[in-house]
Amino acid sequence: MTRTSDRLRRLCSRREYCRSDVMKKALDALDGDRNAAEQVVQALVDEKYVDDLRYASAFARDKASLAGWGEVKIRYMLGTKGISKDIINMALEEIDAGKAQSRLEKLLETKYRTLKDDPQCRLKMLRFALGRGYGYDEVTDVVERLMRK
Image (tube, rainbow, N blue to C red):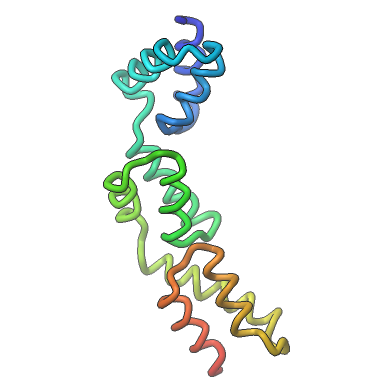
């Protein structure tokens, strides 16, 4: 078991992992022994190698700034990792709303250039932005502004 916890410590010291990801790795390494895996994960949490808030904050920052994801998609993906709603809300508060709005506008301007002659341009732009995880209200405002130009 110490080999497993040492290996997981090394992994967690290189990048952020959430509790559920570390649990899956521990279960795989310990051949499905849930009790031993829970002990290893709890030790990593106690030693601050694993912290769901730290993971969620890093995930939200990276996906918002690098991948151009919106709040809805980030919230959903963190939820699938088993992160609590309170932690997700705290992580999303760290995202700069102004930058997110300008990123959405830039994404849609680029998409509009490729679709401006398409009769379904408005629909395709809405679908594109919603798929990126932005809210319907914020998307429709930007799309309507672009369509008026």
